[in-house]
Length: 116
Length: 116
Image (tube, rainbow over the protein chains, first blue to last red):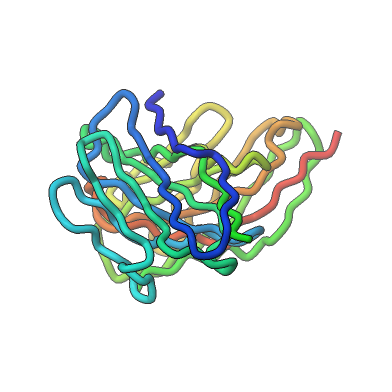
């Protein structure tokens, strides 16, 4: 099946630093990618929709200046957590629907961010 | 607004038996897609099965089947012949529309434990 990769799989950083997370669709093109956040034992919360060639669409309550999203190509979207703080510690997951299909969604393996 | 309800925080099933995980949804849209995902302890979201709102037949994928009752707005997942490897968190999700660019809303999840 189609594969979506995320890098890094985990990261530990100091408060105040910025962290970039990459999401790649490896064998298909994705004009749209989604970024989610998941706290332990909780559901996935959609943060933003990443659109190739245009600005991302953020969900209500998500700070666009703090969570910068860039959809650089049909296979790559990046999420940058700027000036990270301990409350940003979470599991971040991207998903990339194959634009040729409507009946499935592919998720990356997730990135666990810990801010000290 | 779309809403997904999973009323079973945890479920137990004996190995080789069948189990049903409940999911109800609320939407005013006519066009939508329903998904089930499995999330093992590793954190990766694994797509299991999809049902479109206009599909008249219940979806099946191997040991997974989706009991779609549109009038009751329910989309229960049935896992037949449970295996120990089925122990995981299961999420029901609803995607807006029938294109793969639609946003998804997730339920709170059900933790399934398969007993040997």
